[in-house]
Image (cartoon, rainbow, N blue to C red; front, side, top):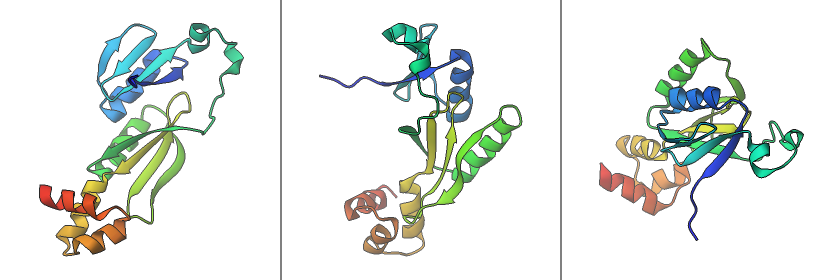
Length: 158
């Protein structure tokens, strides 16, 4: 068996497609009209209840029980992009930007159909930051709460 994709039920395929293309740099690899698959490994489906033969009112809006997760190398630049997008389209925040105890900055928003999207600062970027500030591999791993093997791999890439 092979896992293929995650599919999100959406109300308006064009609005959702634009959202993911503009904010998340997703590129369409298949556009089948009411079904769109992105190169990021997920798909959108309009008229999902009809497709799987369930009542239209059985879809739960804003269920808050799953999220798509993206990482960015430049978190501040993404926040600017989000701010720019908000000039034209309303963004509904789950959480405003915050920093976790493992030093990762994140923001959570809803997409147009109220699926949760988390955007986090790349953990590799965070590890590099601490290593470049002179912290040891072991101390960096402790601070960012990641395995030493991960920090060693990041250090070897530098």
